[in-house]
Length: 554
Image (spheres, rainbow, N blue to C red):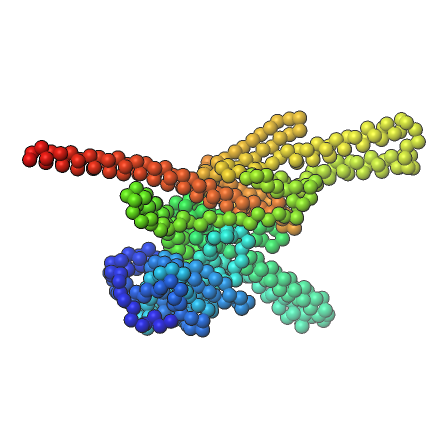
């Protein structure tokens, strides 16, 4: 694209300044400098289907989407083309800074679009004048670099990743210090072995320590690479996986975020990392040891503001449509509501085991049972007792009993563990977690005993998290999903594939909110239409009365 080909300037300087102030990239810039920066940007309009730059071109300029929608195609490290959307407020380009995170194939307008762009020469001057801006661009580039290679199965069908980061590399080096101690110990063993009369034990110790240091370092590196902080257009997520120990996902929808805070230590300020705490109504989603925590904080706040602004725009468009319908004018093409994250309704392998179903769909309800591994854990001792009875009978009678008394004793002895097995199976079958379109339910029913039911409406859910703890939880993929419902927590404990359960809940929450918003909009449109109808009747009546008074005067 030749972005420098005379593009008409249509937005005012004040409008550009207002746009830049909302972006995380330009936060903390002095008010006096905003006018200088905004004046350097040039507006460029794109028609539907027009390419901003074609395959093979380098995006040297810095671009900001003012309005419209673009399709950006990136090539990841595996040579695959990954498409993503660019909407109002998105920053891209600056290929010399790798802001796009990978090689860009093309950028194409899906609708009539306006972008602001800063030519490369002006960008270089700007970065020299504002070093903090250059650091912030590098942070954004680091967050974009992982996007094309990030494949998360919990993403909704219409949900897009905006920012992905790992913990700061300094956090990895601090963890590797323990492996380095072993490596130093290995070197010392080699030195002592060279001086010893029999060096073999020293050299064996050195080899063992070196092997341990290498294994520990590899473990820490893989553990560090498995942890992600993800910001999408709908939620903020912390993914943490401890090798062979646990895996968890903690998230909060953007509409529940109340504040974003940072905390740094002296060492963190020196090395450039800190903690970001995202506060909802009653819980906190932490992002520990993230690089450039201030920019990360600004970025989360930017997308929270975008989400709220999008809701306001949708309501405004709804009002406009209602007025036009009431006046009988041409229909207005309203902006679509925020897309809903939808989870794929795929069956897990355990669903096919009719004896141990863990997830079943009954109409619009999803019913979860605890994982069969939990059931087998409760059946272990009764099964052991059953086997013990058979062994005792075989030991006493050298086979099966030879008289009726022996058979009676054996059957009574076997009925006791069988009774416990049946009891635990019925207990497992009666404990269910249910997800409906409006609520969550946890029901625990003891055979021939008490029934405890806990429910919570989806409207009260503030945050979600799931954890798989221990080697068995990781191998058999079961754990707990924790749901924050205000002043309490609802736990779906022992469920199979907790990540899928969490995604089911998130999708239902989004669908519920969309349905509730549609109903509120419909009620508001009805009231407004009634107001306009009454207004039009009174206006017509007033005009008729005025005409009659004029005729009477004549």
